[in-house]
Length: 141
Image 1 (cartoon, helix red, strand yellow):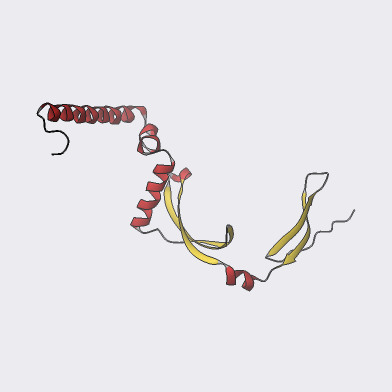
Image 2: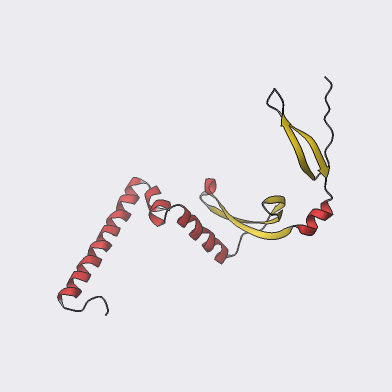
């Protein structure tokens, strides 16, 4: 049968879809939506995010959206330092903390040195607490 493809307008609301025997999705019914009407109800925001494949490089973009639907996205210049810090803190928390996000991903030799230093810090903290307790000083001072 001849193709029934129609040139779609830039913005549509899809009302009905189907999947053919060949597994291809088809839009059966849609309505055109005026871009001006969409922009009238859209919100504009700056989104700061990291790119894991680039060593969690932090980037920022301006996004025009309606709910979770992005109408447009434009990269912006490098984000301010406080935005970079907040983004990286969020990434570290999402990765399970400093150990999972950073320390466990170090090369073995460097990781061993960091883990040795952490063990020494824990030992010193324990010895200091024990020493303070033996003097009757407790943790208050």
